[in-house]
Image (tube, rainbow, N blue to C red; front, side, top):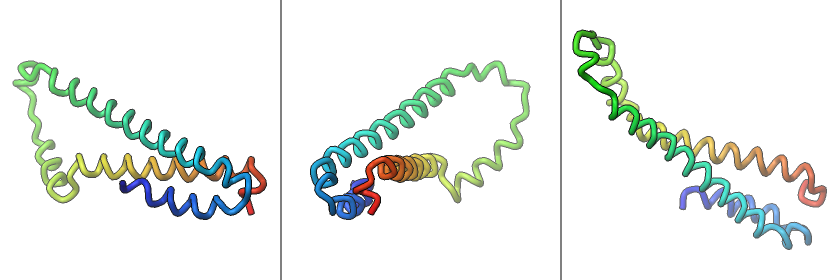
Length: 113
């Protein structure tokens, strides 16, 4: 639901002309589909990375010192990695949507006004 309110606001501004009224719903549906697809792709890539990390044989590293990893825990206490990745995916999806809308708007003269 968090991604819908910018689209509703954008839709209100876009639906002022006749062509925009005709194709505005299709445009909003396409943007919603694009946002969902991007978020799904990001989550699948992160899931596959997590699968790769869990499949690492830790016995190969038994003689290695990981002293610097301790600081990652301190950073994770203030900026949790999973929430940060989620927020970045939402931010990048909104950014891509805005760029896409600007690109589409430049090709439709009635929506530029």
